[in-house]
Length: 352
Image 1 (cartoon, one colour):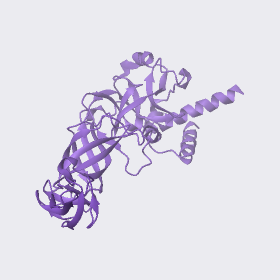
Image 2: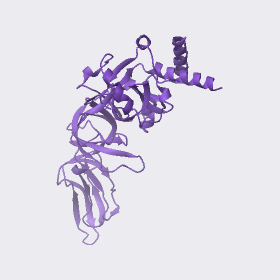
Image 3: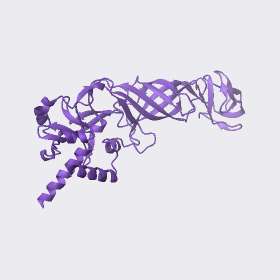
Image 4: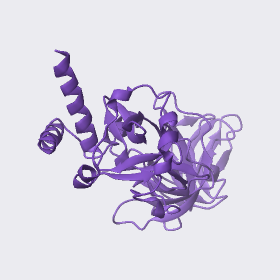
């Protein structure tokens, strides 16, 4: 009967929208940008502790310590403790593991846009107010430093003078017309497009992991070869309107492939700088809207609320809730939630 109840409860959970992964609900709660197509998300894997997988037969001596470690997390009462026979655990594929510290190789994908390298552009402004009597260059023209872009006749001297480019580059903006009177406004913008800025959007939930000096692979689409670069700048503030930060990569562009205005993605790869307490993603499950891990105590398996940090492809960092050395359910934890719900319904029935 218990197995049948498990199956019924699991089916009902699936009907109401179970996401198949304990982090599904949290990914939406923790990343307010998940509804954007290009949202930043964290992937990765724990290379340092691949041997920290299922450990069903060790760590029993931690039970007494687990009972004390579980105190103070008080969102779930002791009556939530679940005791299942070993054969039942095996039947449902529930595995146990000991929480260990390790490093994550993390990959963060960020949306971005190509911009002109503003350190390699020049605004061309008339030296004296005057009348435009000849326009020699237009948008898209390649120019060299000293090339005459337009000829003006000074208002005071009535003598013509040339408006010259200050750098080698391409004319990307033009605000001058034959016969008009100009003063001290910008009439041409010349940009050296041999390098461009890749400005990546860093969402608020990811700013703590993005640093200058990190390697980035920039992709512009399936018809473009990716290019590698290094983050040279991370904005020290968060935009108050978008709640995002900025990470900038300067990439070479000798063939002009990376055109300002293009949308791109940047894949940032790094290893967590220090050991983290790690658990499998599948160990984390939402219980009454609270992310939890089933931790072994002297009373049984107790759902322990947790706070997550860096999220890897297969493992996640636990900031609060589970300590290194504690034993917990690491795989197929949904039947534990079903058993907890069964016990709650049974208790409610007795109460009436």
